[in-house]
Image: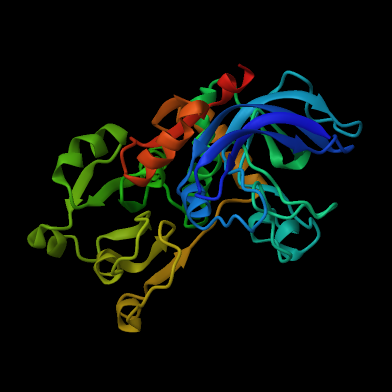
Length: 346
């Protein structure tokens, strides 16, 4: 086994420094020195639901780093290569979804970067809040040199979560896109939509964010508290990317969705209630998405490199991991917290 320092949850869901054990490299594995790891809302949910009686929990599923060792069968990476890893680290590889490059929808369920079950030895996967991660080479991605590694880390979860559905919905120059919510997912959705050439609007309830929305690439801001503005925007948008992370009424957003348009909900993944009439009038669609397959993830990184796109991040030393988690929970980060793991060398 390989030892590496990292951060694991205690019985109260707080993170404590410890020494983690990683597997020795298999033939198709990479050892990655984790340099930067994003703090995701999924990490908060995992910490809040963690039980002292359950398996160990090491969060972190959007990180960048450098290859430090490769398995004997690895041909696509070499020691010293910069890489990025997301929230999926394995899949069955043979089901219909995997064959289509949609490993995120693997029929046998993908192996998650943390809290998952290793497909070969049955161990619980431990995440990227650590100095080293061992990953199957198919699920590591070359990190373009043009991208800052700290700001690129959130692309591997927040970024791909909005990128893949936007691509599947054909977002482009002839599309009118609205993004509901301007947080970790939302700000990247705005950047992507604008770079894809879409007319891009941010929907929110704080007019003070209008200037920030424009800085990110939006051409308009729609204030949900302005009844006249909402009425004027009725059936205006081809695609609405809903990144709001809490339960909310979908009816006002469906009302803004145009003929044959789509409301794509990627923020809140719990139960919702929809009046079918809101879908019927205008042949509207309600959809969602989760993470992304390997082809879409590679495409996203290439697009970001070409257009100079990364997340807006606040970088904190990993020793401040609990502060980072608390700030994310309090919506006190613009727009993604990222941990610098180098202090684990001390």
